[in-house]
Length: 231
Length: 223
Image (cartoon, rainbow over all chains, first blue to last red; front, side, top):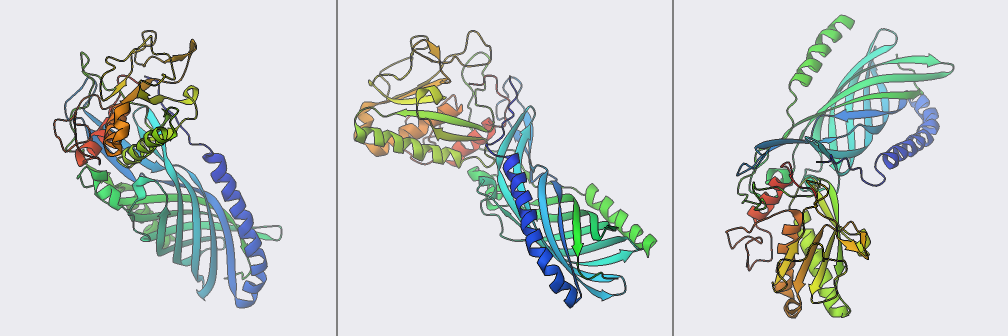
């Protein structure tokens, strides 16, 4: 049996191109904003990176009448590694402590996999917004944690009836370094949120109810910091 | 402060990683038998994620052609909505040379050569048929056109008299697309579209459950 590796037309290149354009758009917005932010005691940061995720769905199908090679087959549906862009604004709350508000967009793609088969389920745009506390650790490092909302937008059947916005927890850590006149950042982020949809809970009409679960996303991001210079 | 942050952060991350619990769906219930009645029974289905291209040969009468096309589009939409994870999709093909399946009126000229794989009967209300490829085990035989192999692996005909009752035509095409997807038998329940003479025009929960199971079972034959 030949394995099926099917990639939808315009999958990866289109998503990464869109992400690159989004980075340029962010720069266009953030760079002029830096002067305004400087005056208001704010820091702006534009970040771009890659995000990976645990599966959105894990399922097992039991064959009702065992055929040759039948039994139970497990399958997974997961977002593949995808580009992510984030813009963040910060203001100082006290020594080494800041409030950060960030918003990001993931140019995602969801794939299914079972045994030797792998297939394109659908494209998905994932938006998130987080308010977090950020604490400086030493001269260069920081940790942060916060809460926010996340939204999955897709035409795929899987997402039919999914709640518009789902609460999100985020933790992160990173470092800043000066390079010439610029301040660059490198950070890692973990997010957790629940996931479910009406289609999943209804089993797609089979009457079998799926269960909501928790999805974890992990991202590495590089960014540029403008304005402020919060201490 | 640094040590304290690390003490808090590391266990929190470890807990988060250890607690990964993806949303789950339990095994499907309500599915009926779908294997083809070979010895032993075989599972025949397209590779998961396949876009199944169907050439709808509606014939020269525009009204009749439109009926067949509309029946196909409605049936395809129903079957596509029966699965959650894009296991298959249907698309219309412009020519038989770009198609995996040909749908036509019985009695009209057949768009591909069927001499190597003729239908079991030409008197049925509708029929979906294919033949194992003698040269490639585990595959279906490609139909030919002017002696050249085409991508077409399945043929579907519908009796021309169905054109006089569009509602019946839609039921028939819905049923035949179930066979195209790989449902190799008829459901015993008249509430299911895949029952032999089902008077239903919507897929039942059992129809949906069956195709969901089918596309997560390892196939023995891939078209």
